Image 1 (tube, rainbow, N blue to C red):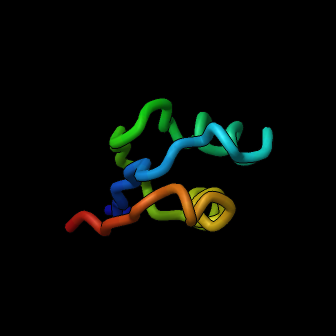
Image 2: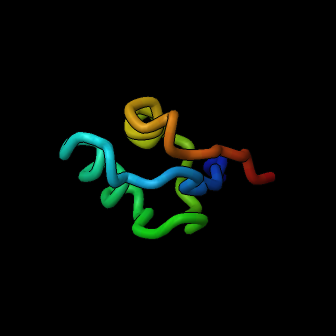
Image 3: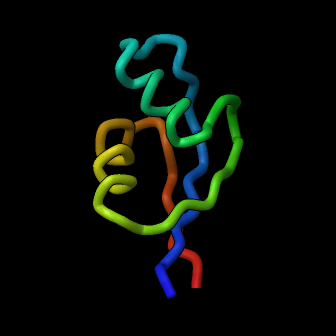
Length: 61
């Protein structure tokens, strides 16, 4: 079974560049405090690393 991670948006995307906004949309985060659950894989981790200043990540057991 794949590990899961919870990604929560903690900052606004108003002052970010278009690539970061697109990454947030691809992660499924559209509004402040929205939370999405994803599989923990290298593609998702790479997306999180691009917007690490905008999100909070928790591992789900």
